[in-house]
Every structure is written in C-alpha cells, then in structure tokens.
Length: 122
Image 1 (cartoon, rainbow, N blue to C red):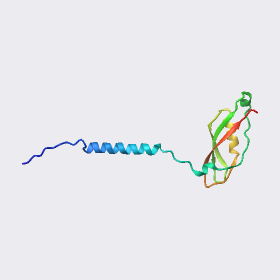
Image 2: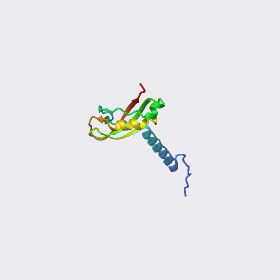
Image 3: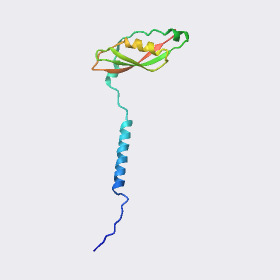
Image 4: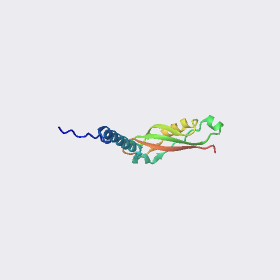
C-alpha cells in the first residue's frame, strides 16, 4: 500500500472562507460609505414666502441669525412639514411656522427642500 504524504496547505477551506468573508465585508463597507446623490426635485423655486414673526423674547434678548429649515414639499408645491436643522432654539418655531406657509413650484412628487430663514434686529 502506498501511503502518500499529506501536506496541509496554509490556504485550506477555512482560510479561503475567512478571506471571502473579509472581502465581502470590505465591499459592503465601501458601498455604504458612498453618499447617495440628492434628487433633482430638491431645487424647487419658491413662489411665495411669508416673513416670520420675530419672537418677543428673542427680540428682547437681542438674538438674531439664520435658521436652517428642511421643508417637505408635496407635488402641488405646498409645504406639508418643516423641521429645523440648525439655528437658535428661540427662533426655530417662528421659522418653521413661516416656512409652512410658503409656496413652491409644483414638481413630480414629494421633495425635501432646505431653506434659510434670516432674523435681523434692524
């Protein structure tokens, strides 16, 4: 009987499976890191704007500045929701209320539009 010598390869089945798993994890991580481009509807033109009502307490405290608001706009151009992204907490509710009254150009479906509302003491 001829008994051959069994040589264990460093590239066995467990090692190959481990490398395959690592490669798949790397591909997944790279794929998730790529930013998703914004939709073209995000650039809708404003048809009409309503000025915000300056909060009395903010005026007395001499708080001014910009509030960034994200508006959810339906296909007809009406704002269905507004959410503050950044800015003064005292000015944010007034900015959101004003943006909810804005009108945008109509488009093909719902879009998220980022707008800036400026509060000035002058």
